[in-house]
Length: 492
Image (cartoon, rainbow, N blue to C red):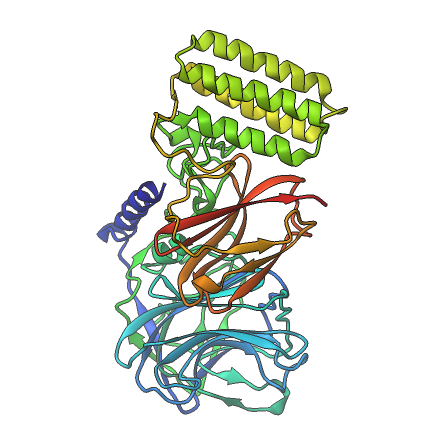
């Protein structure tokens, strides 16, 4: 999956850097004294996920060069609510993304390592309780607020400064150039940020609520190309300058959610990004969807089904009847039994589930099991099912394969079973770049927690508001190229 995603990304990068999409580029140069752009009291993002991004070129490392700023001042109502990207806050080489809550609290994701006279692409992503700071397409810092902050404020949005609202003045001015400012009302994933920062977006797109290309060469208006017409007013004379960044146009590939194969699944969540797989079926839970997976392990499929059945909470006799029959199917398949016989046995299991659906087996769980077994039958008919060879490592029960060795420190989660709230003990991963996701028993990603540098020893996941049915789930933590997976049961 990773190699396929990288290949797709390289192809798309080649598309967007084609000379045929070249355009004239400018930016705005701010003097660090009193220049800024006043956008007005717009883009209140409440508790929604969002992304803010820009290209910057620092000409000095003065105190707190504001890039994009809304609120985060005691002059606002509520005090300190809002969001911001800025540099040089407490260290000359610092860049940070901060989010402030309506109760006055705030969090920052901070990175040290920016310098003057260099173009950087910076992005801040709020995804639930997590915030992630990206520099040149790479996640460099993250923070977790524990609760979702409400960022609404009556302070105007400003580019290049902090607007103090009713206090009647502006401060913390940017000394340098800014280009390609964008605000989205959803969390972009790492692949999208890496792809889109190299090109310009000049037309309306879903979830893009503001984009300022600064491609004019004169005037006092910063035009919003998102279609929302939230144009900015140039104040105190920021200067139009030529810009080398994002010289090409990516409007031709940037579609809703970036769905390359038009199967209704966004690129970042698609387990077959270049091949339609609308159900996201992944029988062996290896992270690669069945539509683009050359082979499926029957051992893993049956193991996953048996673990799912074990998490339903049905009568022990029904549970044993199902799990033993499925296990026998895998054994017979691996012994070379005729595929038609295997399919007949799988169909008999389907009939058994249908007989107990809505009674001994909850209807929704029965539907899941039937769909999974039918998918296995289709894979057998297509000749893409294999048996794990003797001596080969079999993936742990109910999960996609772990890649961490036995000595890896791993993580803990509790309570298990859970009614919706889970605490992750991640102290072994602190200060490492991690990716945390949850998958259901069919291999579909159903929850994204974070991707970036882990700054805290533990994280609380709140699944109470997520539309997830009861059953078995798998929490995956990837760090330094190794994956650790834990199974848990959701029982509301």
